[in-house]
Image (cartoon, rainbow, N blue to C red; front, side, top):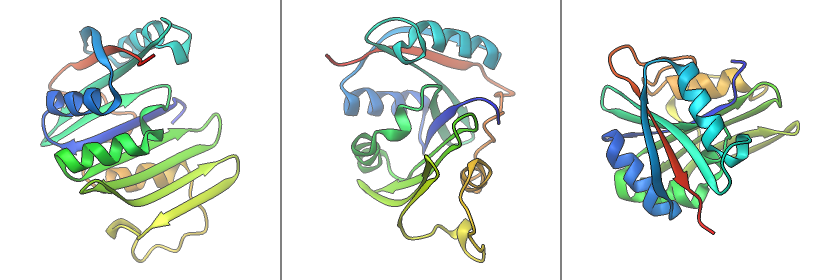
Length: 182
């Protein structure tokens, strides 16, 4: 897991999840492309996202469908830090699973929102662990010595979601650029 990634997943369509995120964040889509390879998605995101050295006042996300899960991710790790937005999305669309990893900075996050509330949060950042809420079923019977990138991905995949190294086998990635609110 050498790439920084964060992702949000909800049992809905990709467009419904994007629309919920747009509304909750107050952003507008300004560009959309379709790509088969993650390398092309990464290039798009870097050129369109202010956080990654691209266009000012913009962010870029990628999205794909996995069964009944819609997944929206970003390379700047901004989506995973929007707790109010994620709570709003869960209030509108239901159970919302969030994970992020960045092995370059030893950052890991796993969160679960449902019914407009945070139900579980695990964050490792700057060698500090934040742990809130109640353990999810995948944590039961596990002795937690530490929380790291591998554990964040294990909890994420326990929902039937693909690893962060996943490339959609049947469909393209959707890549979107959005304008950030002033």
